[in-house]
Length: 411
Image (cartoon, helix red, strand yellow):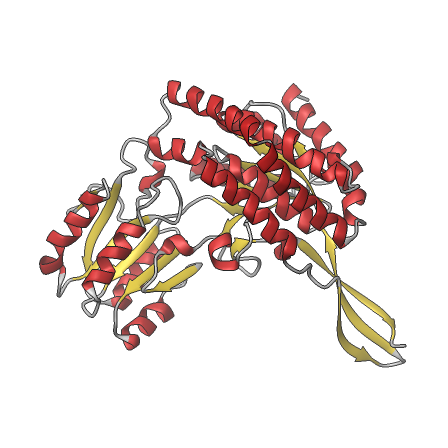
């Protein structure tokens, strides 16, 4: 077995051994751990920010794009937001661990119970805040975890586990080994994480494009289930019945960060107003520091610019006949992450929303809202865009449990 596989397996075994400490912890202990993480994040801000600054400098020297650098960077404001989200998560209710379903014959009743998975893996790249987001969701759902991040963010993640997560768990009476961070920067660690179904039966895959899809295929070969977020790209349709000031504002607000999956990627415009509004659209994009890719396009219409380090400051612009065609283009030519319509016509909005089959649909709102914290007021482990039943959209702690049926005496 390669050395990196041995390193990952050791982390998985340590997490599995420690998992009962979290599975049996009281709700008060779990919430105390989350509150303690927030307190330690604030108290150790200098250590975390210093480790992150070293990661950022190394990434700049390696030529990382501005969008990815933005993802990698922890600012003081972002650190404060991370701490605030932990406090918020500590205060939200725990799911009912047992729910009555119905009475059965012979003096029995059926109840549905929630059980933790045991150990859940997570693979993510240059997003150090995800270390805290995922760990907190695992802790709240009583699951141990094995976290693997890319080399660019490993220093930041190490500081977060050492200074924030592990000591807060210990202070709450929970074995800190329940959250393991793979110490290797080797890319092969990602593939190793999906090869141990008996230790890590579920892995959250956060990343971009082909590499995440390849990990999904590798996981399937080994019988490991995944919650994957490989592709993104927000779509906005500007209808002929739109309030144009509102439309231009939404375009600008959808481009506040270019390296994120739910940013504006494809702007579709009602052909009846296309020529009239295009100059103002181009002006809005220019003010945001973004260029327009106009017809005829030399790339697929749904090409995800956030994944192109050299051209990420780009939005594809194209005319369409109506709202239904806009939804069809979003369904067939994009990942199905999120699409929105700008219109004051409620009937048109309904047509668009009924026709679009993707994960999140928005009316007079930016697709940037497709985010666990913004929509559900808790951090997320990622956004799942599967087209099958299961946790779709922002995945949070309530989605990370197994259903168990129990038949017990009615009295």
